Length: 330
Image (cartoon, rainbow, N blue to C red):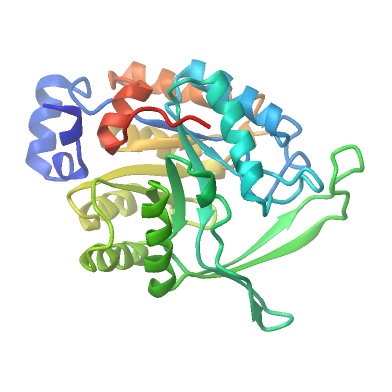
């Protein structure tokens, strides 16, 4: 089977999966694409001092994760003026992409995009469309195909960290309607960027299928879903149901948050899905044990997969599965 044929439809039919596992275990499954989400856009060094915030630290952390087995990096570029928040400058995404490419010649570079508009409930206003990274021409960029209201307790930051502040409850209210998504996809096409669909609940799959039905995006569809945290309840049934609901030409990767991380990561590997790890998603390696590096999380995913017999995707294999061309230069 060619790598381009490893789609979710190959694993969700019960007897096809059973016959393969009965004969081969996980050894004939698609190579496991490991995404490393190095930083995130909410918590920072106040949650774990090993989380990389400067572009140089982000590139070095990516390099270590790449050597450990990551084939795709998801990047939130922090503002140099205030590293507690994401940048609003496209050229700063270009900078971090260039630094990463210099160290990792073939890793897939994925910049957060989010899409949609943030709502300020105190002023009843909405932001401009969130798309700052698209002009940096990442190979992949994430679209949160959801509307969500979240409350996140963020810790205090010291002057040494930059972005000094007291602890506070952050409001994150996002509206992402279909019209904005369709317009955003035109910008993706113009910059040759592949969308990564980030989903927070099962009804987001219905929205994705509706977007696909409009004929404005082509497969294979790279789909992420959050399990735990502000996402779907972390359990087998939810993951299995998501697999049944996704279009057959999807490639499904699981974002596993907080305490559910290792259990759901293992489940995703067994079920033929792919995984995302990194300090955006989990800051403790185990109870009371802070994560030392993004590479440490990649190493655990590799170790679990190898013990289970699942091969690890090289960047070249991940590119073939996702329908990407040669590594983009910056």
